Image (cartoon, rainbow, N blue to C red; front, side):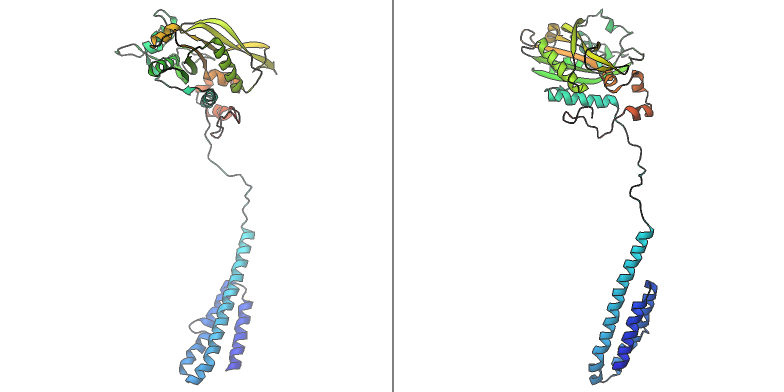
Length: 358
């Protein structure tokens, strides 16, 4: 029997090594270890042997079964690895191919510029203040020293809200009411900017009925025009990201400031286009002045103790000057092609270290 076991062992191991695939290997397994397999048949004969025979043949038959089982497992591992290698070779995936991603959204230039302004003025110690877009006549006009006969109060310049109200209600014509609300709700010193939507009855290439404006206000003791000029120079240099910004302040008139000044910024002509920076010519960018004593008094403060300055400019105009748009109406047309061209990625978060226009 020993010779027969050795011969069977050699035949089965040779068949296992010769199996070219998993199906062939499984056939060898069934032939050896299945219910009617050769090794299984030998195990069944142990029950008819005498104790002495079983003591001798039992270990040999069990050793044969273990050898066959281990050989099948080893061969299966080799065949599975070979099958995986063949599959990887035939089913390659080119990771350099472009992936079809959904169309990303864009940040509107107005929103981007608002974030840039907030970043710049936050570094100068200013807070961002907001207020309602539907304002009463007192906050929008009267508290700002705008007389009853001023043209801004006329129906052709201002959108009035129909209905019975304690005071006449309007769509705010500027964000100056936010300055009034700040001065009447908090104690000085005050340093705020007030960006937001405003409304006037204008419509052409550089004016729309709805537009965006940012105003700044400082109320403190000992404030002078020098503080105003330095603040505007610092702001415009940071915003346009140029050190050659030159300002010119021209005397002007605003009811809510005295003295008042229009602020021009120098520009140069490059390739037929005006570029902010230098002093080949001058371009008006904002209005400014020292807060009128009547405005300070209207807000419950003593103008003999508190002084301040204010300034304001159009956010849409700032965006046009910096990023090269030439028609204000396109800002509000909702043309996705325009937004894809001029819009910003959501990851282009303005920072002073990386550049507010990054």
